[in-house]
Amino acid sequence: MYGKTLRDAVISGTNNMINHREEVDELNVFPVPDGDTGANMSATMKSTLNELALIDDSAEIGFVAEKTASAMLRGARGNSGVILSLLFRGLSKGLAGKADCTPEEFCTSLEKGVQAAYKSVMKPTEGTILTVAREAAEAAMKTAKSGGDFSEVFKTLTAQAAKTLDNTPELLPVLKKAGVVDSGGKGYLYIIEGMYSVVAGKGIIALTDSTSKNGQPAAVSVASSVSGEEITFGYCTEFIVYKSPDSFDAAALRAFLESIGDSVVVVDDDEIIKVHVHTDNPGKALEDGIKFGSLTNIKIENMREQHKEELLKTQIIRNSDAPVKLTVQEPEEEFGFVAVAAGEGLEALFYDLGVNHVVKGGQTFNPSTENIMEAILATPARNVFVLPNNKNIILAAEQAQNLISDRNVVVLQSRTIPQGITALLSFNPDKDVRENSIQMTLALDRVSTGTITFAVRDSDFEEKKIKKGDILALENGKLTYIEKDVTRALIKITKRMIKSDSSFVTVMYGSDISEAAAEEAFRQVKAKISSDVEVVLVNGGQPVYYYIISVES
Image (cartoon, rainbow, N blue to C red):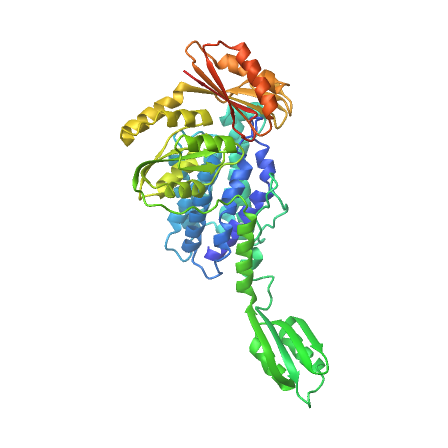
């Protein structure tokens, strides 16, 4: 396999993943709005397109693999995106320095990626994308060792991935009960199916949708721009001829230009001839034009290079979730903090607690590894504590930690906004990094988190019948109540969470709750609990969650 093939295969895999993004999202067994596996895997793959758009046909496979893996690692979103990036990172390591590779070398590299992905997960669970990738790579290696070519290897790879995917419900009871296969494994299958299309000679799979689930534009295909297939002639050539007295019919000039190019426009009047042509030989166009008189306003542009540049600009503009670039700061202070949160009120709260940078993100929108890395580098501290505040962001934060060497980065395992707030309140500037890490981690268990949200689909979950639009109350991530009224759900979950040693309750209302509605709900909550417990209402402004409740001991 050569670099061009891998480049086009990754583009095809990206497009195929984007085309099936919503289908993968729908495989989520839990009915609450979450990070959406399909959206995260699509965004992770999409992050490679800027790099791939600049790689020409002669690039070595090791170079293509390295550029792909590097972009994907920085663009990884959510747990599924990080695991996917590690699969490609292993591929890059296996192909490093190679101009091309054999099927067996490619499969060895795939297996390196699987090993890296397994190591990244603290407790690997079988029946997920990890299992699908591992068994598919093992089967592909057998085909390669038996002398199979790349088409045969990818045929085996996709067939085994599909077979393993179908078996994931037998490995994970929660999938079987929900009647679905693993969403990450399904996304991985779509990616390698897209790659197989190129390897088998069927070409790059085109995009079939124009916008993502959240209304953001999908990635654009770079197939034509990197291969030049849609640009037959490379130079846009324009000039004006000031006609000589003995100039003959301009139709002869038009005929010549049509023989060496296309998009020919020849406008002839009494004094000038205005010419436009796309050709690979602008010199010949000028030579023939000068036969008709003197030339002026000559303009020649390389359309292939121009097309690549415009494509890159378009992708950057369309990638509206790209972060504002932060300035790297020298690590001069002892401690600094980065937190992830969504909602103006929550962001302001974290800043008030001493956070240097808040990365926008959370449920349904997981920031990339690069988003978090930029915030860390913009924090002027030798020791930077990172608070992901969502279980699906922790892996991306840990990858950012691995990419930074000029300062010490500590990723705390905060899985909720209340945990992140409590951890910050436990920080002591008079203690060292190790002591603070321990104290802040212990603090995570001293707070309980309640959330009020809504069901995004009908579901039969944990013996509970759920209808789309139902109000869901969760305690520490576990579905506890199903209601029709938001305030009633808030009162019930708050009363349940308060224990004999509870002393402080914070109710944070979201962007879909008016101030008046929040104050009335707050009044009702206070009336239902002991006056010994202090209760505070905060305008968090967060999306997705009507309310976030923090109960501290």
